[in-house]
Image 1 (cartoon, helix red, strand yellow):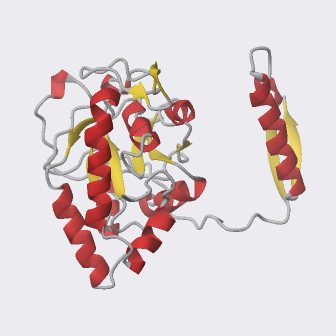
Image 2: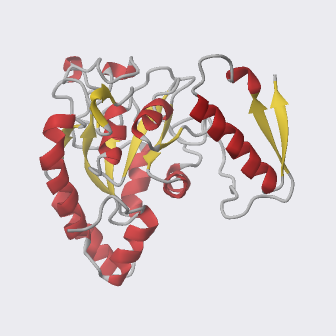
Length: 293
């Protein structure tokens, strides 16, 4: 068995390149976990029938020396992001049986990179909710504590990654729908800057606010996926031109805002403690801390 719990995108890539395991073996490990855990968690609404075919294609890509960092990486996809020839329903009975006629731009980019799509994940119906209780297909439970919700509206994507039912997931975020379930499930949730990632192929909740983003175990994984899916898209007029974002090193001088107004009564002591500890580390790294009031 592959140790899925401690696997990251980069470590999985290294194992695949060295031949420690194949994409098919990795995918089969995730499918076994899904079979075992998903009936209780309800993270996935559907597992795609062509998953192992996708894995074989990714293995061929690796053998031909054409692999990218995301080749063979198993993803879970929120049910409001279109994947050609697969169902997409935004967790609503209204769209039951709808088959996507085209790929969302983010899916096109991940396909080009050789990613694997395991299936579609549960969500609040049409992204209208923050607990994944408002789904026509039942509640998604939190893998950390099954008596609690996974958050929403991208609760299925968050639960899938947290329970090791996928290495990474895509979600959508209008007012917290990636970041909040990531927090509930102990993950990294990234809502990119508006326009950084194409919304073409996303079932809109609020077009002037929606963004497709990532749910991952690590910041590095979020960065890898973001760099793969970002960029200008002629199919989405709100997208912005590509920029180079620093990744490895911080600039010598940078300013960090500390929003003190958020630290009112009701903040758990351990949250406040970690907030201050984070500011201290940033200061040690050379940041100037400015209070925002």
